[in-house]
Length: 400
Image (cartoon, one colour):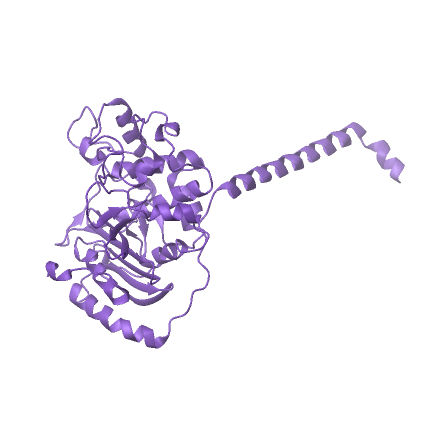
């Protein structure tokens, strides 16, 4: 039986088939190995493990004061956004109200992604720091070793993170002169780099000499993330931060895909604010998230293996010491450093009608987050909650 089968079959064909199948298997395995290697070399955030549960007595002791603040700051549920206070990752107080989209009649809930404006900088900085931590970047590496056309030779990664590059804000140098940029066209991060490289924009101040908060720094950091990871900023942030932490309602705006579905923002009088030519730039802004997702992010920044201790210390060091004062800026985080030794860390944001405030009270393991898509400065008032949890010597009487 076997002999008759072999006689009828073309033996060279069988050998050829075996070789083809074998080589396909090898190619498949090789491809898989390559994918795994690439995936494994990408540093990722890790969730913080279980934290100590709060007692009901403790929760009861603070919720009254938080509720009083909420009702005073946003009377009649006028916040138009989301507000959350948590300790040890456990939510103590939470409120959501107002329109997500007035025309559609949709309301803001715990799962409604809102534009977090400049709080995006904290997330961009976190991705950069993870790359530094993994040895893929150096804090004092010159930017022009990564972005080859970047025209300021003395500027480093650390200077971008701490706003000491001396660069001008892209919103200003693209605003008036058509020979620099035609505002009928959407501006991108790569456009900004190209303008800096070819239009002789010049610096606002000598690189490394003083602090000047500037969105251009974080637009460049987003390009650096892309260059180092080989991914788009959107995909890098998803793979390194959002997905590992289960931030399922967080994303970087994709103008073409998301523009019709995102939550719009409003002026204080309720008039919707449209998009403009700056709305495609990311890194400094353009992350949409929720208070609950940002709580996951905050707790992960408190995980023991977030960063090596020496690097972590540099994140919370103030770099703008040329003027004596309490206000300072670290690596992607604002701070107030009092003479008493007490330190308060935070980051606020504003873009169109969106306002945001992120406050990690590190000593107390407290997280305070407020997001709104209707223009108001009341979002920033959440810092008044800090003295409930620790010795933060604010003088709020001056603000009444």
